[in-house]
Length: 340
Image 1 (tube, one colour):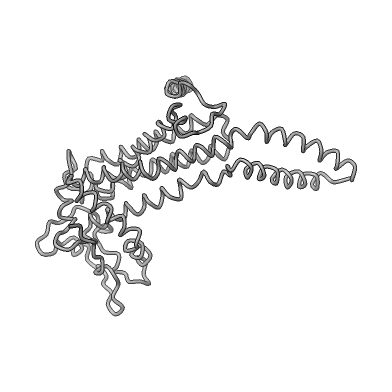
Image 2: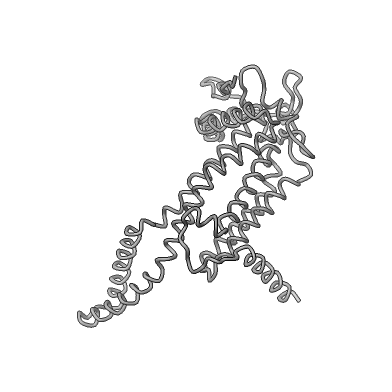
């Protein structure tokens, strides 16, 4: 029977505050338990600072209802499937990605495709409106500034009417981010709670199970990946997702180029970050990134897009994967030619 986790010991005491003065004391195993190889920040309880200290906000997040729900989901997957913890983490990630983020990603592509198909009509409206405003400005003696403001205000109203007409406001395409990012954070914190012993169920310790719940080179899911294979894999897959997205966007604006460079930098930064967290979290990040890459490639399939009723656009291709390989090859060749 699945037992709900109890995290009451994390709650701050109103009259008692504990501060770790000696780092070696924080690593001392309690009751003869196996010592963790995690860094001090990952082992020390955030509740040691108190509700008004630096760890107050994280403590509130780590004991929040969404994080507890994520813990329950992980425990349910582990209990129901009977898999070791590495398999339970993989199963949970695949299930959440398939049931939650894949439909939202398909909806995002649906909205973006409808917006893309509106561009010719928007350009036509802009051309006629520019002519009408120019004539009106000449008749009424408007200044260039007044004419420009009138054009922009009217254009925004007309474009908004088109979005309402086709029910495809671009903001709807951001729903994936607002769901996927919090879910990723809650799952990561739940695994952190498990790996550091910050969450226990009645009768057994999840942390003890995680110490032998790994596979291959990471048998201990509470320890860091000293080989750096998991962290580097996370960074490489994230970079691959960014490059695929960058190749898909032709004629990017300067702002889009800056955003692409920023996401590249974040992907590289994820490597050292993933090297400082328990292997359970790094494994979850790797599985999540791999599922993101798979979904990105799947949503390029003409058959799958047709199944999801995503409208055709002029940018769609009958051979998307062949075009992607050709684009990668062309990009590599162009870099080599610039180098030599």
